[in-house]
Image (cartoon, rainbow over all chains, first blue to last red; front, side):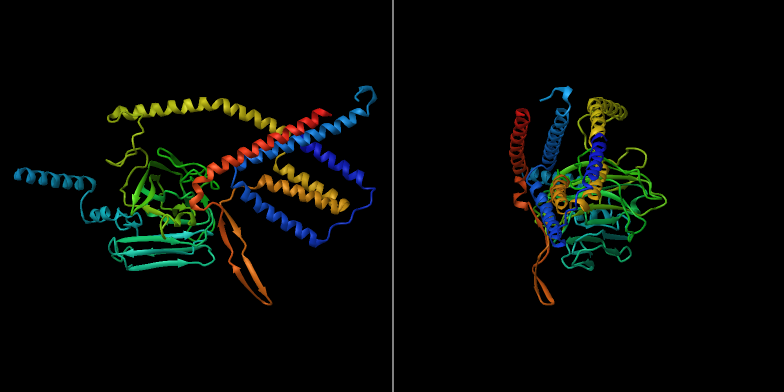
Length: 91
Length: 437
């Protein structure tokens, strides 16, 4: 719930911040189709890959890795903000 | 000396005669049953009071199914043949109505070139048996890695909707809902979501054993179905699995059900006929009226002990669930986040968002994928003008062929171990980067 609320707030914030900037053009439909094809092949690839290892373990490792990276980046953002506050004295 | 041989011969003859009399209750039907029991493919439907027998395939891929009706057990030329085939593998139904034809034995077989998990099921209408408890045996080839037993209640044979009541796997393989292993002493219980008119029922696994029939090894499950479906409802017994994994073990026939055991009235108690009871699990001392009471007490104590043993795990699990629920978003919330991002960024960021979305999808596939036994090969098409023909036909390619299946746990363990080591090393690098700042 906490992560969900934070993520929703950040997304809304980014949406507002990006509004004044010019829009970036989208990729052609052919490229999107190609990316979708690649994703479907990747999906099959994962199925094959998970047949040679224990999928539960690998998925747990991916989850932990993502969580650690997210925490790491969140910590960096927090540190960046804290450094802007003079009386905290964080260098 | 001569008289001793004669006496020995008479004694052996008497012994065999006594044994035969003890195993059967006499009569022509029993002698037929005894002889047909040597083959698990034969169903002596008449002695079971079956007027008809059907097999219904639910979105399955079997190419061919048939019932062979024979006059004798070992008849090589079928007296009657009821068959159904489907090249593409759709739903289908084949049945026999031979109750009054004077035939004695029904053999069913299924042949298939490609198959999929959980999509093919042989449904046998045993509704005529459902007024009482029924004891029967099910045979699966020993090396079939998939297969399940469950019960299914439908409105009629052609009903598309059906409910899985009980599911178990045959071997140690997770297969959709078939995550539990059949073992002696297990009991199936029907799910709470029963179809209208279908009453709850249960099924006991009396014993699990390995038998060799015609040189092929099978796992034999002796089941007792306890159900009081009165008035009669259409409840089907289903055995399902993959054909490809089994076809190497036994040609053409991969499921067998032996309905030759006795049918007996056993609705509310654990009374079983003489000699047909579940195997002794070693806890009881056997015999006597007090034995049942002792076993009940032992069972209750075992339940209490199991509950107490599981208590710390359940408490820890509740706390972990609460903490996880507080922080980690569930699937709906993740989808909501993704939808919000798509709304906000796709229009504004265009190509950049497409790339970001690609990697998000990549992550999603990594987390959602699961081990597959087979991969759907789409085939290779030679497209010349308006004519298109397959160079290679679409097919399900099995990742682990039967010959290598025994190596699967070893390879999986080894690869997983290497991945864990690499992952740990990667995490240490992240930690070093983190702490170095």
